[in-house]
Length: 506
Ligand code: BG6
Image (cartoon, rainbow, N blue to C red):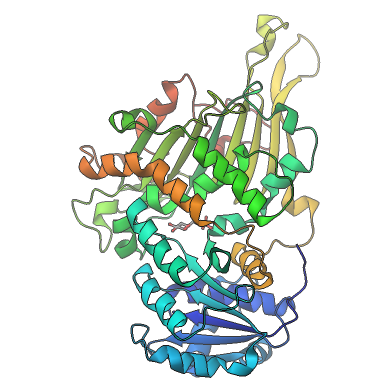
């Protein structure tokens, strides 16, 4: 990937400029790219919203930078310089005539400009905007015009197909950039480097050596101010359908021929295609849902999900989901992938744990192995960023005793350069026209297809036991049973000690 700003003028048209996404994520990322000299010299932002002025947008974005940027509040001078690139257009996105005004504003003389239409708006408006842009002739030039959409991309397979049809009616697939911000995280991108830039992992990266894989994305926060969205989504749609399946694809995919958008995305799609379908009558053997009750997090008593503002008192929405997936191919036959995610859990931690098989024969005396632990490779995504290989070593002295120890790589120690935020990486790639870290239509569709039996079953059968885990715990008991049935256990991430000590399975 080139690390240079594009040389052409770029027009970045931000729909929903006064909204939450622009405020928290897009604005801070654009500003950091600007500070890092990653925007082209003629870079312009056109903030579009129903009601917007340059002053209001500048104040709103500046507040977002102050609160959410990794660099903190901007200096007045930096901000004023950045704002010289800022312009606004107040328009009603449903009004088709206003797209002609937009086209006029963007100007004909900019035929070689890169144009990015960033839809930081609810999916219900995608149709109006994509259609309006096309009617005004703003969808042309496949290599220079891009449209960006964010999840949620649909509510189920049918609604995803409807959104996708709308977008693809007006834009070519190569123009559509579907964001999954997990793919912009440094540690997530490093999965490919770990696997394919080192010769030692690939030979053992298969069913012969790996017993199972767990992927945990645990959050301490609850639903916060997003009740309206979350009540229609839930953990399976919000996290598993995109972020967790993307992580699984990176762990399970075959080596790409080249680090190239289509090759990598083809290989990831193959993983989803190889996932065994979950029979509708066996959903409970493959998936578990949970909803948090009140509990304690960091010494604070927190409300249960049903008591949060804007949540229905009898809500059936899951705030926790765990899924077991099997990948039917030569590499992974019979190696389960256990995925789990939830809100209001005991810790905020995302990590992938690759659990290797036990030795075929233990030659050490029984007493030496009392603390014996399986070998694991743990890819820490956040908040720790690194990789740990946990293996057995001999304790000094006699009698002969073995103990688990850790070999660690920590991003912060190995590299002095701070990691860019995920949105910075993705926006940078978007401006360069590199779609490797964006989701392709067929991939999103395959992810929906895979989860539909769970979605339909859960929808048709309200959970009789909700709420079923206290805030501050590791989720519902049924999630323990999901893996225990296979003779396995989740790894509790908070039990990872730098020097490895006590048992890490519970
Ligand atoms: C978003 C989900 O996609 O990812 C949120 O909608 C979730 O519910 C968030 O909190 C987690 O992302 P991160 O980067 O904070 O781990």
